[in-house]
Structures are given as structure tokens and as C-alpha cells.
Length: 219
Image 1 (tube, rainbow, N blue to C red):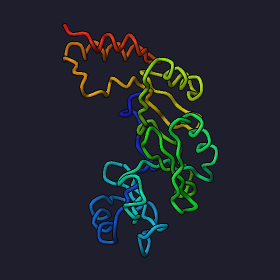
Image 2 (image 1 turned 120 degrees about the horizontal axis):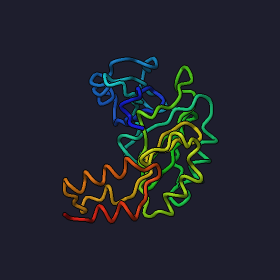
Image 3 (image 1 turned 90 degrees about the vertical axis):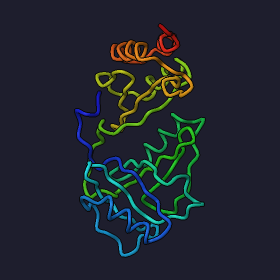
Image 4 (image 1 turned 90 degrees about the horizontal axis):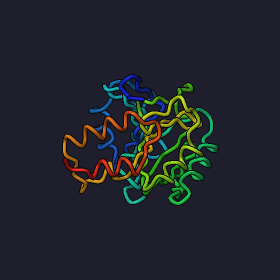
């Protein structure tokens, strides 16, 4: 499910938290190609701007105290009316990692997935916009059992399963991949990397052990 075949849309944004009005104005000037939501008089939370850059990526820009937010830039999933069900579902799927963070905003909620924050919103967009595979999330698994658990409890469209990609019940795309593929100490030579890539392209659900053996092979 290569992302180049799909168009980006505002269903998934990046939330950019600034420290003051001047910083908000600076980023707004640099990023804005299209205004998706009327600009607020003040950017102090819970007020925010929603804009789209020249690459079709949307941004939520607001002021939020640095000591209270878990990151400068946080991905945000926009739901049309309510995020209760997806929030509960993601909590269940990532039960070892979930920890809801208070944002003091009726339209936003946040949780952690493997120590990474994920923001959910409701009613931010003017109309309902379906999620697109042009933007997806990578989840790293430590073994085959963990990979399989996501297919059993997460994947809802078998026709979309390819090379570790799955589609969840809300239409959000995920890449469920072995952790060693992003393990920097593991140096893969170009020849082995090419073979590894070809093997991945032949799979729907990635096979941890066989890929690990190939990744560790040196010709």
C-alpha cells in the first residue's frame, strides 16, 4: 500500500505547540499555504490555528506550556464527532503503554503509544474527511507473536494487508514491522538490503524470524 498512490488530506495533522504568540506567528508565516480554520485572535490554548502547507500536510498550531506537553510536534487524528471509541480501542491494543494525558480541551484527548504521544480530536474539521494511507503510523514489534496479535485484533480489511501494512476499524493505516528493521546498530549491506526488500514485498504479514536471519546475513 505505497503512500505515493494516495493523496494527503487534513484527517491526520501535526500539532505544533509553541511557547508564545511570536513563535506561533513565525511558524504560521512559514507553513501556511491554505487556512483550513479561521485564525484565532489569540493562539493561547484552547485556541488554535489549522492550516495546510504547500505539501498538503495540515498543522494545528497553538501555545501550550513546554513543561506540560510531551513533545513539540505531535501527530493528531481528526474524528468528525466523537473519539471515545477509537480512544478506548487504542488503549486496549496498546494496553502496556497507554497513559492518557490531560490537555484541558473538550475537543482533544491524548495517549501514549510506546512512549510516543498521539493526539485525537473531534469536530475540528468542518466536514467529515476519511483517513488516507498517504499518512500512516509505524509500530515496532519485538517478535512474531506481537505482530500476529495486531492482525488478530487490529486489522479489519484483509485486502489492504501488504508488506506489513494494515487498516484498522477507523480507517487509519499502520505499518506493523519488526523492530530490528529500525535498529541502527544493525548494519545491512546493500546486497542483503535488496534481498530483504524483495522478501518484504512478497509478504502480507511480515515474518519476524525469516527477515531477521536474512538481515543478519553478510555475503
